[in-house]
Image (cartoon, rainbow, N blue to C red; front, side, top):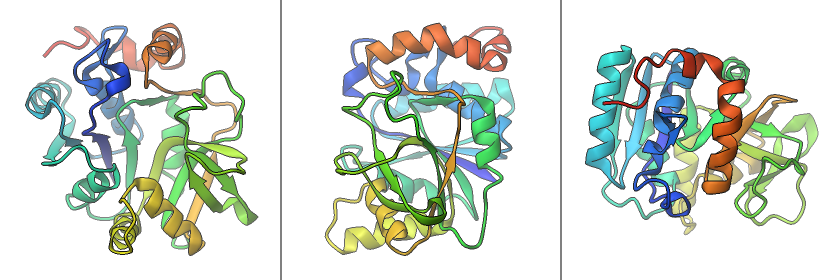
Length: 252
């Protein structure tokens, strides 16, 4: 199994801390490094990283990280990083055969979430999304969250940032099959913008979008300075293995 990390966007809400959001540091360790090490710890043999904004700088860091960590990292650059994130999923998925973990570069997770998610494969599902049913948690930004409404067998009925009824929040971690990129491409052909959520909704409409409830496990979307401060306070407590192993955190 491989992993795909989306890291192409502008990251405007975190610009006060870093020109490149994937390179914003949590206690000295860049977000993208945390994501890659999380994916490898969950069993990924290769990590594909989709780059765009500040691509050359980020790709230079990835090359150095691959050398010092021994993790196979393959960058894939998109020419237009202003388009919806589904385009990044399609670009990265072209480099992967079979199922893969799909992660956002600004999300961090307790190890058990990704380890459990990696084991959720089923021929009955085109994608499985990690969800959190603690929708009133103070660790969730209600203005930026992607909400989820689940139905029978915990399948997704509706997903999006502006849906009216929901009972969970999207954690930003997926076990994807090739069906996900195909669904995004089909949504674009139908005239939709091409977001990841567009593809997810298409699979949901076909009863092919499953969920995995993370229970009480910890995760965080580090999307603005407030949540960056929380990450610096809490991430070393919840992810001690990722910070303890860094001899020279964040250095290329």
